[in-house]
Length: 389
Image (tube, rainbow, N blue to C red; front, side):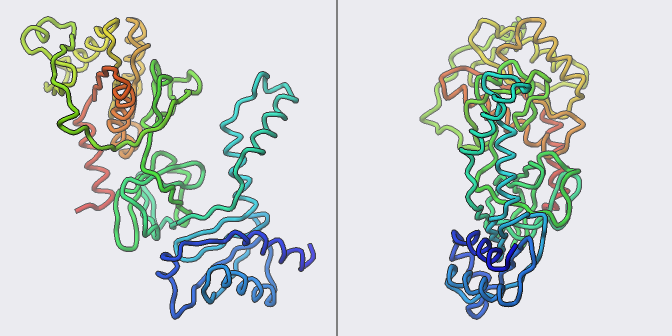
């Protein structure tokens, strides 16, 4: 490639460069901003001077330009100033197209239908936004046991969803002056020190909708029952404000458990919270399973949140509910004992978010946490790993 053509393409990739002014001030020193520019091929001294002046005019500051070469970006450029990154590389745009294609289905044809596949791919590419990304990023300092310590991300929010490589997501938990603590939602083996972490600007959310009924999902709303993909109606934050006092209705409709001793002696109402305490093996889970089965035909949807249980126990529960015709109105949210503490911590929040979707439609929902003692253990483990005081 000719030098003039290479320079022209790099300047074109930087044409839409626009970074947040308040964040630039924090990294400016005597009116000069240090900038790192990554390109696929090395720049000459004169090309560096031209690019530095171009960037300075765009940002309104004098620029101290440091350049690096990374052939893996294929073309374009990646510019970093402080915690902000402007990614106009060919590699990033191809990743966005690839992610969009992974979510697409072939319309009206099988994967062996070449014409249908070609049409589907062409439509996906046409509607994918391939504009340069302007993001605030950080770098993983250390990672282990489902916890990552990240330098940068100075403007991250508590509970914010962050994106890591390989489609892995995390949630911001600890906010410190120069770093943040992030809990990883899976993918512990795919991320490592030095990896880039991107802010999304969104709070942690889970998918909700009618499509979840009758399914077994993990706390991220992903199916784990082998029955295919789920069509979601929307997403909801895992933490949202509770209804005010004026918005709450009196508890005046009973919830029939199907167990005479409970329904007669200590009746439970719809809208009430009830704690079941007992020693190990005394039938606590049996009570709630009977209660779910008894809701058949009563217009009550059920969300069963299994925290820290064996996968075989969850599978047995699913078969039991299916046997008695209760699975069609039940969502099972499972964070098994084999999964990380952050996922077990997230499980009850995810379950109640799914239930709130139906509540806002005027439906009654029974949410069961089995059990919260294991949730407390997971929260303690997570807090110790985050080194919370």
